[in-house]
Length: 203
Image (cartoon, rainbow, N blue to C red; front, side, top):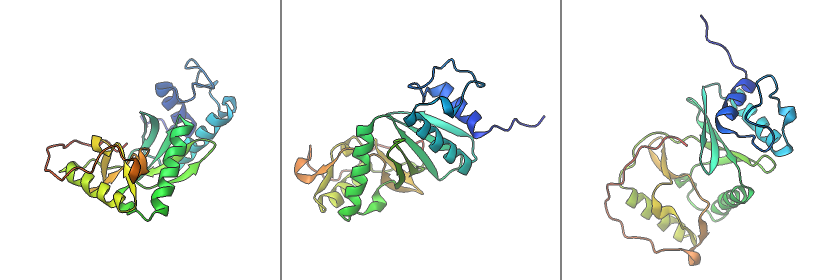
């Protein structure tokens, strides 16, 4: 028996049922027959449109990770769709990427983001891979040193949990704590070999 072929709308319905993405527009009790983008409020309609576009372009089985922002990832895709719940966070990260570019920071140290949608509060981003990261302390030290040379700093990089990899290359995937160097919350720690290794899940 052949596997049922789901439309992008079917997939979005399933993702919403599991994650309540459109909680401001429809209830979790909404049936598949009743589910339609026409029933969504303006922002949620924008999110729906971006999810549909992403799923048309990326055919793999989709998953939706629910953290501070949703991350829609299709299997084997080299890009994800970030869905921001909070406009302040969206504005902060968008402005941070703009600052990094304008200051001439080495952008190879950061996950690339593009396609910012100011109405839907979404953006595309590179997919992280699952390589383990050795010596996160050195990675953190090198990135903070590079930022400091541009009079910038990341105030939460010392947590070391916002560093992933793309094709084995360490990158920062969360830039909301970007500040001027004078506003840093701590000093750049000296490099010390550590045992902080973990497996990143591509979100």
